[in-house]
Amino acid sequence: MRVFGWILTLTFWTLIAAFFHYTLPQKDIVRVTDTENRRIDFGENSIFWASPDVGNDGTRADRDVFFIQTVQANGRPMVYRNEDTGWGWPPYFKFDTSNLQTEAADLKSTSADPQWALITHYGWRNEFYSIFPNAISIRPIDNPDVAKPIPWVNIVILTLFAMVTYAIWVRWRRFRAARIDPAIEEIQDGWEAAGDAVESKRGRIRRWLASWRR
Amino acid sequence: MIALVRLLVVGFVVLSIIYICLSLYSRAVRKRKLMAEWEAEQPPMPRDTFVRVGLEEYDNSLRPKLILGVYVVPTVLIGIIIYLTNFA
Image 1 (cartoon, rainbow over the protein chains, first blue to last red):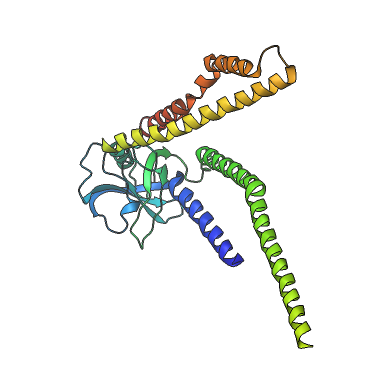
Image 2 (image 1 turned 120 degrees about the vertical axis):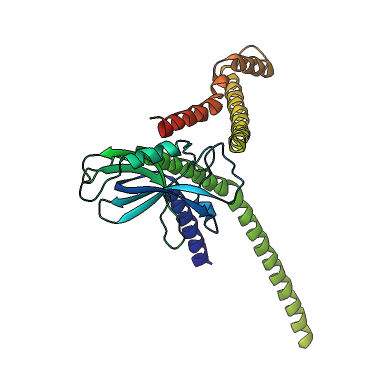
């Protein structure tokens, strides 16, 4: 039972961590190799895609999506999708997809003459599921070896989340100590008292039976 | 357009729930403080009158209006995010 509880707790916190890892912005240092626009038929991976450009018809099952193909500073490829998040989730309120595509195309370079860029994105790349991180913004940088900026937004959001979680936890513990634990103890006491009563009665009957046997 | 309407409606409902809860809580805290004050100072008027006058004073003060920040802060935050994401 205790193991089951631990597994449940661990699963819960893993899901919370995955949620934040997916949703919060991250920055990559990349070199844009190409940009393209291709049609996607959304399948079982459809929750990992955002929304069509704001104002367009969102009822169709398939649509064209912008992609930004890049190579990271460590030489590995990384492909980003470039979609509006619009007024929906996650709350980036991104409407400038076409502008971002233009900026990315403007930074295209070859490995012989690289132009590095800092790209902000959220989401995951997963080859087995064909999902791509969504690019939020891009800006050119001179040197791929510079340190990435401090992620203040993430620090603030995670700190706030930790504070709220702690506040709820403390109140829950206080509530449990004040209301639930005494109630459970009362029930237990009741059971024990009932048990004792049964025990003493049984003892009496046994004694009465014993008196017959003699 | 539907997405915007959904955001506005859901946002308004959620923020209204928070606003109402905060308002009631804040007023209850003030009421409790007024009662404690009456106990401590024993002013020359009945407790109900003292509390009622104190709560009327509270209703007309700036404090309950500050709770409207529940609506203002997220709206401003969304405005800032829209600017930073699309125009900065």
